[in-house]
Length: 193
Image (tube, rainbow, N blue to C red; front, side):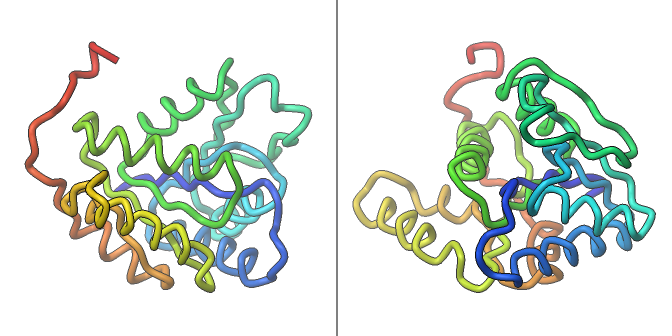
């Protein structure tokens, strides 16, 4: 993996451990020569993961929609900042630039990004590993919900297993490096979306 997209909150959350782990993730990616691709903001966990990577001389690319420039406040010290028009264009560009995805704590936007990326993988539009860094059990209830989707017949176990989960950065990165996408047929092609 040469580049990883990180989706996370533009807030810090209530527990200091979220910020500490976001910073450590940025540092770890930079030390392993993995480019960070993220939302381009200097606020909250977004800015923290970028600062962790930049502090270790890592390469950091931010993707920020024009209408969010003022609200999220673009990070001024990035290797590259790409301004796009829409949120969908932002996710598409982040997908194009990465070899895998890591999700940290966040709100609605973070969940939307996670589920769009895992849905694209389920449909066979990409074969990239998607991981949740489950800091201090933040995503425990979501993980239970996803298992309920399997138990109730709305999600196949093979698709549930596409979502890699760990509470430790190095373990999650190792799972991502060893990931093999399921060999299921594509439902649709990129041209049809």
